Image 1 (cartoon, rainbow, N blue to C red):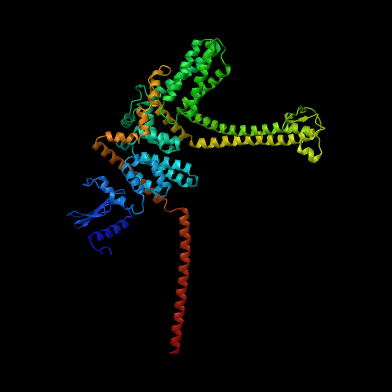
Image 2: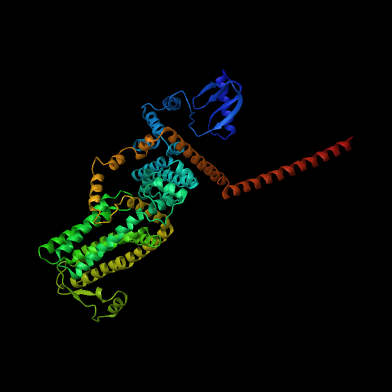
Length: 624
């Protein structure tokens, strides 16, 4: 069957299929049997070799040959042409060309549209990840795309979440199997990739990559030695001398934390001993303004949230108001002074989150504070609900407190359960009937109000003090359990975010860094800023690759291919381990038992037939 066919090319194709099936469908570049021709599956053509040899060269699919005389677009054309039959609009063909040619720099918004319309599948992007020149960047952007699609299309949220989880796991496993020297040679963890990984850890909860050992080792080296990732990687491989003092990001960060502590102490001193000094309050205002500008000028890494920015702006606004009042001879607004002191200590707590001992506990406290914020929303809702109910029920009614007045055993029971504060009565409404309960029962308004007020109070007591309080306890217990389980990865994510912020801090602490921070802030928020322009473009990494020499770029891509081979080997081993499960073993055992029973039945049947045959032979012998 292999040798049949109208021509040599057809025979080669048949032989290719047979050979591919022998290797479980493993793709390969080409093979040359004993003869003159070899079939290239990526080109769908035969090539002459004029050499007597047999070789099989494995690679990733789609398979492209090196040192080709044709251009890259010509090699892509036969593969893309297979999809033109089902693509009448041409959009799929165009997106496939862009995806294969551009990789991580392709338009993922248009790819999301194709996936949503069923023209592309998550499996295609998963296969393309191993073929990308920058697999980490491609996987992170794909994970972000599916995470966004899961929010926009809830009906397919499960499918999109599973696809996003695959790319997150790929990033974690890719960095887990790669030796540190290969990561350095391939320049896998450059600054754009590190920044994107940290951002995605905050945005789509992909903390596996950031929490990996190699990533954290590089972050620790940047934190303590050099803000440049490439120099930090070299120091990590050669062994850095940390006994030599350097103005590292760690020093810059803790210097600013100490400066903020000085701001807090200065305001405390001014509040108690120099309250009416406009000079002191002006210095405090300058200090807090410098901190706010530094926060605004920091890169977006997830370390400073919008709440942190609003806190700093609120502090500046409060200090402006205090300075204005003191400058005009008025007293210091005590509420603004107290509020800013609370916010100061909150910012100090944010600064020590990178401490290895205190950081996890700070994360737990901040997470529980988030639960308290959610609880407060429910509390305000129910308080407003019962306020409106009481206001409608006791409109134009004057209540008389009788909580400590003995009237019956009911009073004693209510005092024992809830306390005397819920026992009130209304007087002077015996002659009116303004309640529905008064109409149907004939009761006086005072008695009907007592009954309805008792019912509403009973519901309020069970809802607010009992139900909501237990809900708060359950939420905090659940949050503590969840955070204690994931506190290590969350701390590593916060640490990486802080490192990226600290590496761009000025040498001098605030408020002496105010001119530099103003310049950074202006550059960040203007259209001509390079950082802003690169963020709006398709990626900073692509420009970096274009600046590299061809030989350097080829070596880096070769190293990335080696890491991908390690990842594929590990994935294959894991799949082999998962082939036989306990359920499958039990199923095979039950099938084996059934087969054994059938064999026994067949064996007994054969024995019976043998006995019948012997009896028949004996009977025939007796007749003779």
